[in-house]
Amino acid sequence: MTSLINISEVNKLTSEQFEWMFGNVIELCTEAAANVHKKIPFGCVAEFCDAFHQYLDDLPMEGKLVILKLHPDLAGRMAAAGQLTHESAVEQKCAGLNDLTKEQRDIIDISNERYKSKFGFPFIICARENKVQSIIDGLRRRYSNTRDQEIATGINEVKKICKLRILDLVKDD
Ligand SMILES: NC(=O)N[C@H]1NC(=O)NC1=O
Image 1 (spheres, rainbow, N blue to C red):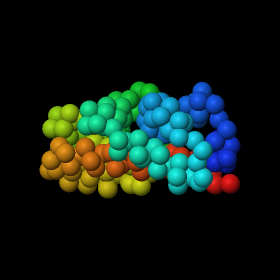
Image 2 (image 1 turned 180 degrees about the vertical axis):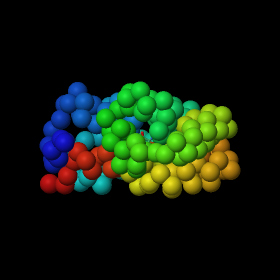
Image 3 (image 1 turned 45 degrees about the vertical axis):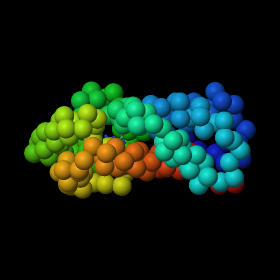
Image 4 (image 1 turned 180 degrees about the horizontal axis):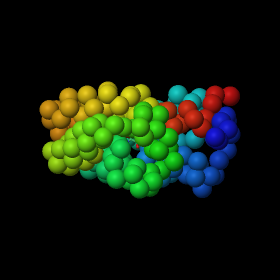
């Protein structure tokens, strides 16, 4: 477990150090960290989170789609092959996705594929704020949304994931 660093220490990081530390607060998106580094100094953690959220809001539609597509499926092939990022692996375990029954695994597999073929990007939900049943319910419920609604919902979930990842790394002074 990494120890938390203060926001005033964050403000002193070089861009290389900053990208190393925050390059995965948005899954596999070091570009977000490079962009946010240009905005230092930050007064508090909330302001720091807002800068990442603003980065997401400012992306054009195509950029938002790239972000959504950088996420692995929940309980998908990458998880089975042990190829998740450390953060994603911890989050998926926390939601109980490592202990699925055969029936739950089949439902999630089929629902993930159905979702991806309708929308063209993976179903994204903040795993740490959910458990297996609410993930299955979300997969069912959100499938009937429009693509625009799901892009907005997916980005909103990325924001929640991002905030929790930041809170694992940074504290106020
Ligand atoms: N597909 C998906 O939601 N993946 C993400 N969710 C989460 O909490 N961590 C992830 O990698």
